[in-house]
Image (tube, rainbow, N blue to C red; front, side, top):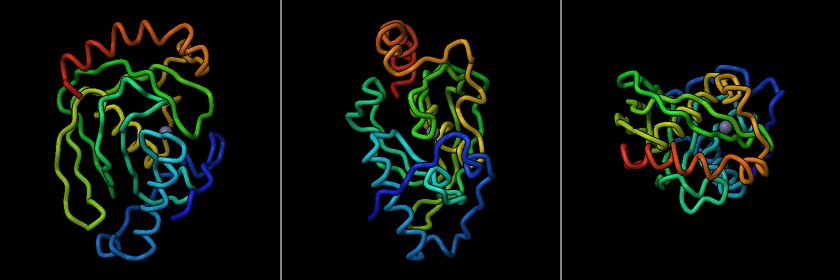
Length: 191
Ligand code: ZN
């Protein structure tokens, strides 16, 4: 496993629509190595997830994991999840305002509207079909990562007036976010 270099905002690969992986290639050594490297790179950078374009590979693979995450200590835990060729559909039009950051956008956070309930279909790393639903912050994390595969970054949908450095998030915005959105979303969706 290798820790890969992370592409930063401005690199054109972050703006390309990633290619789907043919299902019969999911178990190939190349795809399995990419998945292992994504996991290692995400964990090294304390990300809640990372998508293949962020390591300069324009293919539809993303990995997500939230444990005791120092970047997002309030996020409900998500077990290690590997998604290949994911497709998200909103379930209803309910949204919440998520304060997001991104490994490809250093030292910036901003508020992004996210669907509160989604259906997600994909393949796992064994090539088995996944068809599941997510809600709350976990749904937000899935939308952020899958957006990377469509060439989208959180800054595209964020309200620019909410942009803040990570230091100033801690100093001026975190407490309010914890007392409002985090409390409400966790109480309502339990995730
Ligand atoms: Zn990101």
